[in-house]
Length: 231
Image (cartoon, rainbow, N blue to C red; front, side):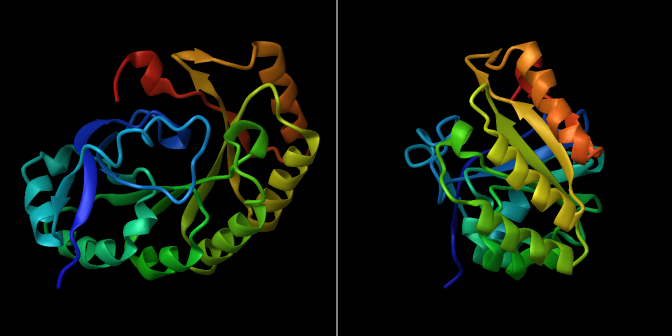
């Protein structure tokens, strides 16, 4: 029997994070996550409000949008890789109706699930979870295995690091080792709480410079969509 997905919402907007800020995307926000980050803004609704789709139903639904106007379709969440079996059926259905890119937003801890669908993905926005900001412990080894799979398939990938004033030098060291090992562009994203950036500008610049010393391919980019008041 074909698996049905649980999806919180489907909408078009601009991408507000990372190096693709400003492009128009169709966002498919999947329910559920294998992690519970302290700053997550979807975990409280993902198990209460959702729609169910088969792969065919989801294809027909998104074809109601103006797909030609999109840079890409963003698979987001939650954690979309929890739905890798569903995506393995759904993504091939798009080849005739959508010519843009498939953009995966992931917490980068589910390497086996990534491997199932990686041939249908073009861009991977992969989080590196810092214990000091996310409350998630000991995820660096899982990130390492995830990046290994992504690089094996030569996919475009960048790493997003949400941080606050509590970031530790040992965490910076772990991130830099991953970035060097897998040639990752790093996006430092100051944590946003109730619309406000939590680290002050001096701390942001201090952290930025610590990364730049060893890894020039590092940028600081806040959540622009929140400043614009869009999803």
